Every structure is written in structure tokens, then in C-alpha cells.
Length: 526
Image (cartoon, rainbow, N blue to C red; front, side, top):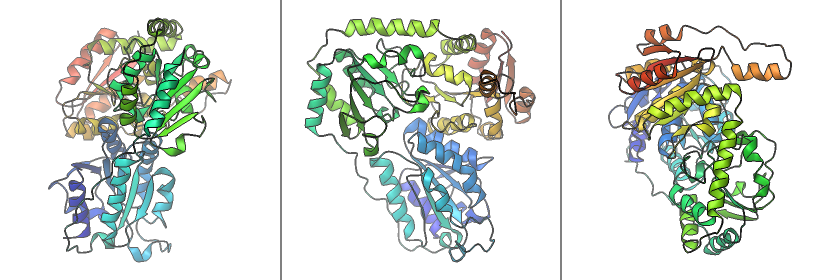
């Protein structure tokens, strides 16, 4: 078989069942091996394909895979690489490349980038070119080892067209993957003692702790810690838990309590500026950082105790260490949490109250296990701290890289990865247009995805920012299409709604439909 066929077979042996992409003249050899054991999903743009792979990774924690042509395929998909990098997601981009003999020479061959790997290196855990067929199993082994045992980052593997066509006689097999690092028991004991002695402990939880939710909840209840999530950590501890403030560091009511914490337990989180949008969080207490990435332990928020280890096993061990402990301030912490939640609701601005009303209406009728795939839009900004979630991997809001257009293709990838789990899209009118053609992909696949478009007359957040800084509006008020007519032209259902009741009815119906449904909500209506 050819190297390209052998690559597809090896991907299947690593557990890959689906790849996303658009075939081209430089990936024809791969097509020989597709749709036998590995399903190929046709996107409408490689950016959409990358976002679909990213959505697969968000929903499962397992590698999402995109397969694209060289040159424009790679540049189109690179936005999703950047987003997967920022949000620590295991995404694999496999691309073609020009013939090996031409790389770096600038001869003007088809789809030429003189060195594709140099372009994607800053966006990946590593980016490499297979110069011969035998390089492929070595590079895939390196990629899946990274996904299994280190901080997940996207990987780009470039395979030139002549290498794809090489004949492979041996039967490539996957390597045995290593586990994640374990914590030192002495560090666990030290962290437990600090938490036992804390008068006002605080837990900050990020996406790296997705599998540690139950143990983190037990720890919070034993030490009386208020819990604040990053946007990636939303739902790891249920938002309705009496000690949870959800993903709310963007709120002044929450920022005010940070200096009062005497011990901060930060688990699987960068403590990123893009969760709070303040230059620096005002921590006064001792910081315990648990992170699989050693570079996080002493970066912007140096740890007083740094534990480089897997969050799940570390938090489980810490929970056992605290098993017999019960702080006296647990009920007081619960009362404080309830008071802060109330103050957040009271402090909402007029637009945020409108968002919250829409989100409350949706939450009332949505299944508890639904995945909300959000784009960068004002409805989602408010949803980060108002829309209740009770499970991890259910809130897609890529605040870090903050690209537009991810929501719809993310939802497609998530729904294919979790076919029994309902998925809904929350997207602004501007962001929807970035990857609108992927509506055709969802329609072809007959995916019952409600796509709620928050129609607020263009790039509303930037309009507001310009107005606040007394800048004349430039490039933020472009015309929108008739979204209902556009959706129907793409073989989707569509409806305009102007009341909460109409929204709820359309949403429930969309979850049972035979294709996606675009639901247009207008900010300037009720």
C-alpha cells in the first residue's frame, strides 16, 4: 500500500474514526484509504474542517483530526491550530506538501509555502515534515504521546506528495502510550496542610481539570472554599453547586473577593487574562498550582507550592488526604457564594439583562447534558457566568485565542463525536458569517443542531468599545443577509423569533428536527 494509505490505517489503530477536510490534488493518495475504517467529513473551507476537529477534541478530550492540502489548506486551517493551542486541545492537522525535492527552493510549484512547518510551529506543540515514509509512524507516535502524557497542544504533520505515494511493505503499529505524571506524596501532604489551615480558601479551576470534578467538589465542601472556573473549566464543578461562582472572574463582584483568600488552589488553569480582562488578579494569599505543564508553575503567578502532575490523580490524592477534615466555615462560605451570585445578577447592565433573559429561557427547556457551542459574541460573554452547566466539556467559548466563526463547525465536530448528546450553537451575526457555508455540511449530515443567531446589527462589542472611547464607528455596521432565507437556501430549517416563548418552542422543535435549524433572535426586539 502507499504511505498515505498506511497513514490512514495507523490513525485508525490510534483510535481515530473520523477526519475532517476537503480533498485536493495533493491529498488524492490519502483518499484511497479513507471511508474504509476512517470516515471523511467534507467541510466547505479548511478553517471549518479545523474547527470541526477542534470541536471533536473539546467534546471528548480525544484528538480531533483534520486532513488538508498544502499551502492554502494549511493557511486556512491555521486559525483552528491557534485556537486549539490557546485552549490546550489535542488536535492533529495532517497536510500535504509539495514534492520533497522542491521544498524551500521557491520554484513556484503548486500550493507552495517554502517551509510550512515554520509557519505553524508557533501554533503547535510541534510541527514537522515527513521526508520519507518511515518518518510517518515516528511522527505519529510523537504526536499521540504528547496528547496522552503532556499538556495537550495541536500538532501539524506535513507529508509531501512524493512521500505519500511511496510504497510501504511493513504493517505499521501504534506505540504503547505513556501515562501522565503523578504528584509527589510529600507535596500532596503539604498542600493538604495549607488548605486545612486556611481561613478563607479559594479554588480556581481550569480546563485541565475536566476529569477531576467530583474530587474537587469534595475538597471544596471539606475546606469551605468558594470555587471560580475559567471559561474552559465551566461545569467541572456544577454551576448550581452552593460553593460555585461559575466562570465569573470578569465580574467586579468576584474580583473584589480575591484578595481575601489566604490560600488559592489553582488546578489546570493558566489564570489567564482572557478570563478576567484585568491586567493582574489581586491575589494576596499563598498559591498552590497543580498543572501538567511545568512552564505554568512559575510564570505570571508564581506558585508558593507547585505540583507538576496530572490534575485528576493529584486531586483524587488530595481529596483522600483531606478525607477526615471538616472546616468550620463551610456554611458561611455557601452563604457568601449565594450573596455574590445575587450581587452579580443585580449588577447586570441593560444588555446583559436581556442576554440573561434569553439564556434563562433556553436553560429552562434545554436538556441537562446539552453542549453549548459558543462563538465570541455578547450573548456568550454573559452566558459564561449566567448560563447554568452541571458537567464539564459542555461549554465551548474559546476566550483565549478568541477567533470568530468557531461555533457552528465546533458544534458539527462535537455532535459527530457525541451522537447521543444534544448540541446547540450560540453565535453572533458577525461570527456566523465567518463559517456560514458549514451550514451545508450540517444539513448534509442531517444534524439536529439549533443555531441561535444573536442579531445585533453587526460587530456590536466593537461598536460599544468605539462608542465608549469616542471613536467614530468604522467597519462595524455592515449589512446582514436575510438569515432565514439564507438558511433555507442551505437546506436548513429557519425561523425568526421575537419572544422568549417563541424561542423556547423553536429550540425544542430544533432538537428533534431532521436537519439544523437557524433561530434568529433580534436584540432590538422584545
